[in-house]
Image (cartoon, rainbow, N blue to C red; front, side, top):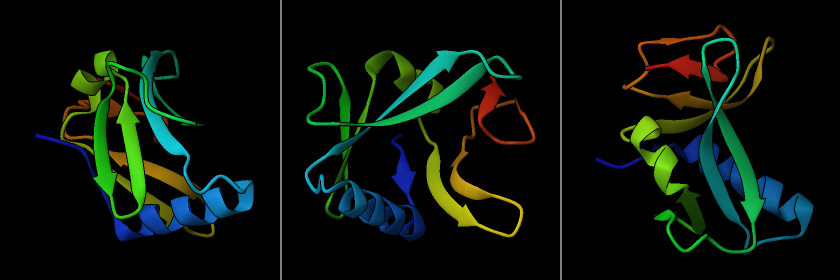
Length: 108
C-alpha cells in the first residue's frame, strides 16, 4: 500500500508553498507520541527528504514520510477540508482504531 493525496490537499500545498516562496519544498510527514489519543500526526516542510524517508509524488509535490512513521500511516489518504467549523489537513487513516474529535491524534 501507499499513501494518497486528494486534489484539495494538493491545491492547498501549492498555495502554502507559494506563500512561503519555497516552491521546491518537500512536505515531510511523521507520527509522534502524544495527543489525546496517543499518537499524533506531524507535518513540516523540508528542503529535501532524509536518506531513509519513503518518497511519494503527487503532481508537482514531493511527500517524504519518515520511515519509522510509515507503518502507522500506510494506506492513509491526506485531504484538506475547509468548513465553517474547521480548516486543515485531514488524515483518513484505515489503521486507526480510534481518533480524537480534532483528527490530529489517533490510536492503532
